[in-house]
Structures are given as structure tokens and as C-alpha cells.
Amino acid sequence: MKTKIILSLFLAGILLITCKPTSNKQNEGQESVVTEEQESLTSEEQEYIDSLNAIIDSYEEEVIVVVKKFDKPAKSDDMEGLIEIVDTRNGESYSEAPREYIKYEDLPDSFNVIINTAKEFAFWYGENWQKLEQDKLFKYSDSLGYYIFDMNHGNFYLQTLKETGLVSDSLISSLRNMFLKDQIEFEKDKLGIDTDGPIGYPADILTNWQEDPPSIDTNEFIVNEISLESNTIRIFPDYSGITLIYEKGHWLVLGY
Image (tube, rainbow, N blue to C red; front, top):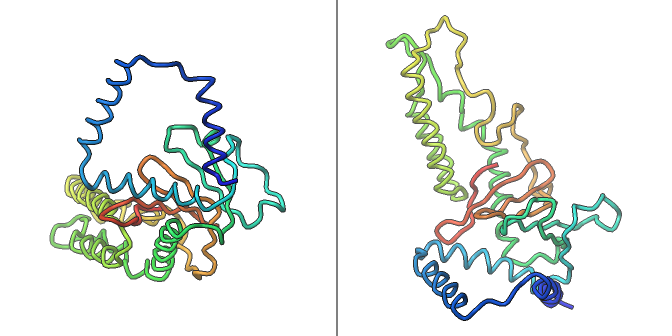
């Protein structure tokens, strides 16, 4: 039995128990609100919703699994090789959200495209994070006599990320805003060379790791979990999660 059949029976039972009939006026009012909401969506917002729904539909159609509202089961032999898909889009807490367990080879193309984007970026970042030289974002200015944020290097950092074609405009915008804020703060504080600094970020900007980002082999990028959230999808390989957001017709990296 396909998942959608199982889900339909499951949801029908819940609806019979919990739902009360509504009057025609109530129905008309609800339909009117729905129509207004749909009409108010921009084409990009509608495209995003359609994309997310298409992903859900594709794995529900292609995989024979049962959705259960239980915490993630303890690791056991029968769980080996399965990917957990957690759907928190309807506001449930993580532990109570519907979830499915799917064999890697049974994942539909819609999910594989997203996973491959996350994998490509993780591989690229593991190989190239040193070239970004984030420590150069801060430097001591001999002419000014205090530490400054080097926006020229900040622009180089952002442009290098953007040229991968794998990161979202949202990530670039977020980082740019952070850089501008730090530039203003450093100009305000005017930290002299006799101070303790800071002379750089205490951790990697994107991963927030104290240690160096790992250099990975793409074959080591094994996904354990996919979390569907309100406006993002989070991919969890063995070592860390990567968040993607839908922009301009593609799922692109929003961050770690």
C-alpha cells in the first residue's frame, strides 16, 4: 500500500474524531480567506510552495512507508541504511512531527537534487575555506592607529562564495549585513594595537566550528536525516547539518 493511501486512512480517522461540521457561511468565509491568501502570493512565493509540495508528493508516491508520530527509535540493525525524514512544517515539535524512514536508493530525484547541492557545497567548502582567509577581514591600520574591518576583503569573501553557484542570495545578504555591522562597530570602538583585539572571528563564520572545517570525500557524505521546516530543508550528513532555501527556481545553501 502506498504512503498516500496509508496517510489518507490515518488522517481520515483523526478528522472524524476531531473535526466538527461547519456552516455554509463559515465555509464560504474560509474559502474567501484562502482565495485572498493565494492571490496575495508573489510568483516566487507560489513557486516555492509548489516546489516544496512537489518534493513531499514525490516521496509519498514513491516510497512504501508508514508515517508515525513517535520519537526517533533507538538505533538497531533494521534502521541501518535508512534516512529519517521529519516534517515540522505544520508547527509540531520535533519529537512529535510526522516522520518516515526511507532507503537511500529509494529517494526520489527531487530529494537527490537537494542532497547533491548540499554535498557539492560541503566538498567545495572543505577544499576552499582557507582561500577565503577570513582572518584578513580584520586588520590593524597603521594610518588610523586602530583595528578596522576590511570591507574590500569582505567583498572578496562574498564574491568567492557567490561564484560557486551553490549559495543563496539570502546567505550572501546575511553575511554582508554582518560585515557592515562589524565595520561600524570597529570604527566606533577604535581598538588600539595595545588592546587584546579581537583581530578576527573566534570561529569559522559559516560552520561556527572552533576547529577547521573538515575536508570530505563526496563518498563520505552519507545523509542520516532530512528535516522539512517552514521555509527551509535541512540535510544532516554524519558530521553536520546543511540548510537550504528555495530561491530563483533552485534549492541553494543558506548555511550550516
